[in-house]
Length: 233
Figure 1 (cartoon, rainbow, N blue to C red):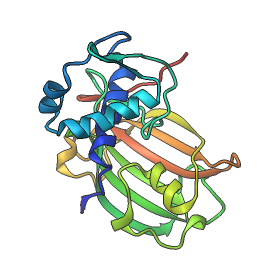
Figure 2: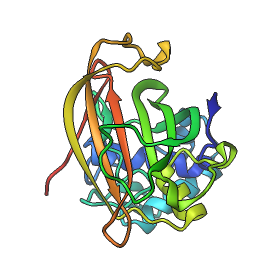
Figure 3: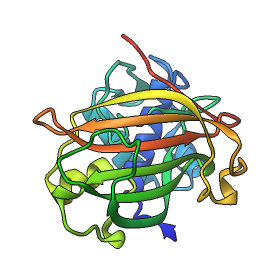
Figure 4: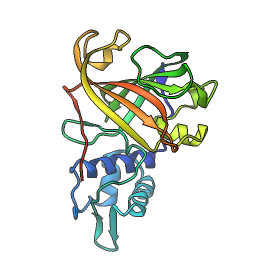
């Protein structure tokens, strides 16, 4: 269909760095490259990079030492836009982006975990990439009680951010269950696994602030390129 609206570039870069820190690719005390070199390597301006580094500094993940450089301050449970996104590239990290395939309001299918009082839901199908590599197929069902219509043009790459900013719905926790399923018939060729092929699947139920289920989803993960990661502290 098309790519959903991207987050601002400086937010994308700060999220990429956060995921690299969480994956252990950037370690506590590590000195980042000089800002001009780092910006050139990322293909962004120094000004954009500095906004990203400001975000990390505000989160306590970066110490900026005048005349010396920028140093990682790794910590657990960093809250970020993609804090609930548990899939990483095999080598760790990876910036998530989303290609929107379809948005429809339909009767919820059999087998979908309980996710709200409405018999209908908004079905959102997407192909997720990590650093541009196709990694996850998503079929997401938002309970129909939260809005009558979802405008595909208004969707964000982070659905939880879209729910919060547009619908006033805060996702406070999620429960994932892993199993093996077959790649669904609607999977695009770009996913990298053929329709009907066995594939790891994560079934998620996401909860709103009242502790009630608001969304359920099925997520097929291409384990040739990515893995599901849950860090326990």
